[in-house]
Image 1: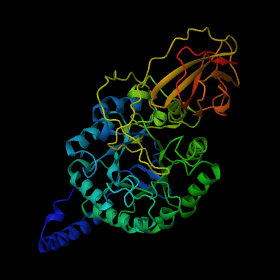
Image 2: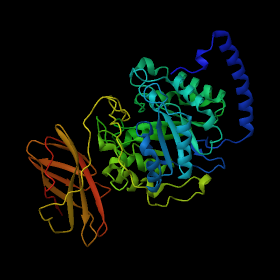
Image 3: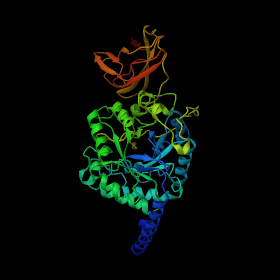
Length: 485
């Protein structure tokens, strides 16, 4: 979409820009005298009072699931988060989220004591994805929302554009200049919020374009309030790759967050244990992708927007070691306490679009209008075969099916005594294969054997954990017995 400013005739445009520039000088001077809300200090994001704010957050796909937001935000808070990253559209690619809509989101975040990062998703893959908008268009979008953004500097951050460049080297060469121009445009318009900038290469910066240009981008901001964001998917499948990238920003003395990460990508499983442990070790913020609504539910933390139906991925990022629930601290602007789980509203299913991942080597899971098989959650089955007695029991649930494949989870429950490890086995339909998570998988013929992962083997008496997989071929019957010992 074109901004009103871009429609002005040349002379009027020049006059407007001169006036705007003069205004920006005054605004910047005033800003220097008045401490901002959320802002960077060295390598840390801090609140207005100087207290570090370490985000433990979740992304919510608001622009495609507007009907779910009113219940999703309280549920995300109840799950333990202290921060929320909200997917918005500038209208270039998807339906625009206007000022009224965004004001309501901010109110919901404040009511639920969440620091709210607002992001424009239409920029995803610019330079490679033809439908994507530019950072300049994104900047105009934020300026159009100025009336509801100004005055909220303690509570919100502006993530100018999600993954604003793809893997096109020619386009990516403009990442630094385009990012600097967008930052200056926002400041000139009087927006003095903490600005978050995503890396190119679908957010993963595997050629270190953002890393190399970060000092120049940081220096270009009149407010000196830029936070860099790396997205960790298939590129980050081993600890050394993760720590090397994080170390580079530490050495430069620049602030960095992990703005998205997931534990499975098309190219490789992500070393999420290292992502989370390093973030905790370094007092670095992270945001898991995403609460719910992915067509392939492997990256849904809860299935069908039901906070009671937590997936294996959700268990890890919300409840696992170095997870959100155990490490989140509420911002001091809200009182600085850890989240207290509260009853969440009953989610009433409503018809919603079915997003699909953008087909790139390792991008954010981004919806398109392409029809895809809809994954329909099914009730947890009651096995007709008595479970095997012993140190633990296990129950199978087929989460959803589509032509040629399915997703399933198994819940493992310790018996009357605590256990230090577990191993399960079940029979798959002939010809099927499984690719899984949250366990150590092996397959011989039709027998699938799964042992605990390093982080979920120890269970107290009666405690549960789960693992899951995406399978090819037919799904196992709901009555399939799973041995556990």
